[in-house]
Length: 460
Image (cartoon, rainbow, N blue to C red):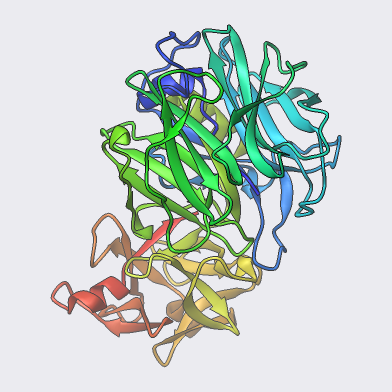
């Protein structure tokens, strides 16, 4: 289904642009270059991670994300279907936030709700005033809401997908308080099934990206006004070679670079990210997975800039994960995991998803080092045995402790990443070979491919 953006009036100032908000000054001020928050729900290939509550993650660069609250929901719907998809966060003109989401618990696409979930929040740490907002009386759904402040009307516009004329179009309602809303009207209808509108304003021009639901690609439109019916296509189809939806535009805090996120539509999905330095030009380049890391099992992201103080407060309130994921440098769509008690790297996402979660504890043989303890088998650690890496229970011997201890070093292929040197075979490093983990002798002069095999990123 569909996903939205989390941008806002203040978020716009942070990002160096506005979310479909021409020229009007923000009611809340914030310095650029601080951080970002992402809203999402969770699913996994076998749906063991399916959770249709509001999840949050934070980032300092808008590319690599830290889930909050141990990747558990921070708010859960109790009305309507009692589940949400496509959460969107908007900073209101008074500096607070409103959260909107699709009323749908799971994947019953025939479920027809005329309502959206709504929460108020002063800080995204507490959520109040939970309610349903009715947006139409049609025999159809209301999917993937996004909202923006329309200064010409002095109201907020709420844009979502609904079926009229036999196909999904983007509808709009106007509201001052997210308690009641005006009658719906068609906002954008390209003549074919269209969902997932996401907005930004750059240099006085408004851009909307959406999903062409007939071929699962993304398209960009633009308009010099905010008027319904005024947006026209200005990009070629954008896609990674597989179905994609949920466009989300973010501006770098540190460079004249824009990122366009997209999510594959199935529970087997993952995020993709494109970049450009010229939104008006409409050309986007797909980033290598090495550049970004999505929150575990996340679906349909919505991203908003926040201040450094807000990012710090969110992290303090909800906490960061007690576990890590470890990404391969030269196969960055793959993560270190155990499978049948063998250490390996596999393509994200996979089940059991817990196999990729590790608690990095002080080294069993030397606390200056590190040992990898499995989250779902907490009595077991990664160790080498005949130079291959296995998951095994700690037998209490000095040999086990030595085999399960590694020293972190600057990445052999990239010093901003990490390599792991064996404690008891100090000329050998953890690396993958044919996707299996082992320890091999390596130096800075080793072949580039070998050094890349031994380089990893510790993240979430």
